[in-house]
Image (cartoon, rainbow, N blue to C red):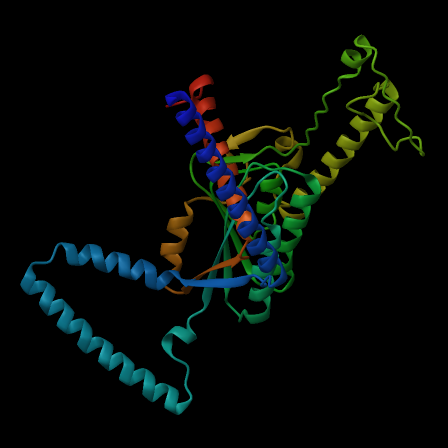
Length: 353
């Protein structure tokens, strides 16, 4: 008797859970469809970093004040703000530019690269906005972090940065962690490259690896037919048999790509001994400075703090609101990546100081 009751109760719970899952799936699908129909264009988010840094410093200074000193500082600040507002009003009435408007602007951009250089779309929009509004003496700082990736992706990203130079806008690239391979291809476009002491720089080379399971398939009597039109349409393949001629052609393509990479670097950094550094090796910031791969040892934070003395610093971020399903998928992907990274940290031997 009791077993029948528990079985019935269990079936009822499963039916309720199934029904709830179906409702959630339907609602999620409807929301996703509506968001696709009313998909909005991305927006440019502008942050006044000068004001942000000023408020942070102010909070730290006030922490050390006594109550009386804090009251006096607040009183003096309110008085100064009133006088400033009055002066600004008078300047605008006369049609004069305010002190902030007279200052040149440093636009701060961020590029965190993956294999496909997927952030290039956002970079393009940010650069296009700067080109349309930049005034003489305005500059751009790109905080770059990338270990490299696909040739065509990083070639396009580097071309976007070259647009700034074509319009006479000075570009500085700051590397705090890594700018290797395609990442350095982007960095070398800049008028100036600054690097943290232990940032990884260089890796001017090309690599490709293709697994081949032809012998495994042949062992299990599995045939794979690869039909092509054109002698070198398929040089190497995963499933079919790779010929020596195909491998040689593939290696030739890699060598040609490497030569183009070297020419690109030499074009933008003519004082660099490209043959010396284009070996695929990477160096830390201090070593890269000696090899002329970078121009100065400095972090991006130091560049920003120095610029704030003379310039107004604005952070630009181009963002696109993603549909609900994409956001859920992205969160699941990040969770899986973090789990895998934690496992690798436990399994692999890493280099520590």
